[in-house]
Length: 88
Image 1 (tube, rainbow, N blue to C red):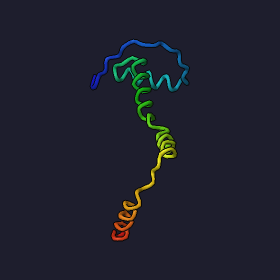
Image 2 (cartoon, rainbow, N blue to C red; image 1 turned 180 degrees about the vertical axis):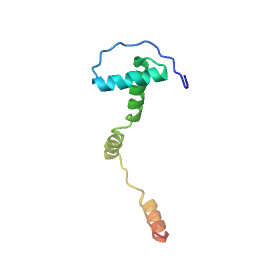
Image 3 (cartoon, helix red, strand yellow; image 1 turned 90 degrees about the vertical axis):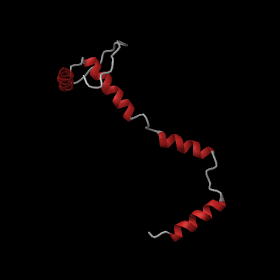
Image 4 (cartoon, rainbow, N blue to C red; image 1 turned 60 degrees about the horizontal axis):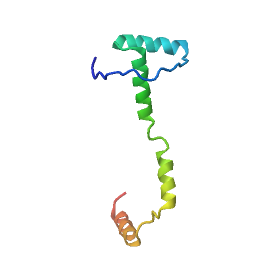
């Protein structure tokens, strides 16, 4: 199997799935030569990785509320001067 990851037995859980989702997962697992458990573990890992950064903006904003994020006045003037010289 391409990019095979060793699957270690871990926690057993019971999960209820709609029949159609179970059947699709079963077909994909068979096509890929993996167990349903492996397929579910891979799918869950990918889902969690894709959503790992949710809430990051809110956490950054919370920190920014506690820290002075204002620009140094000299740097602000310098940046504004550069903006006026740029063609928009």
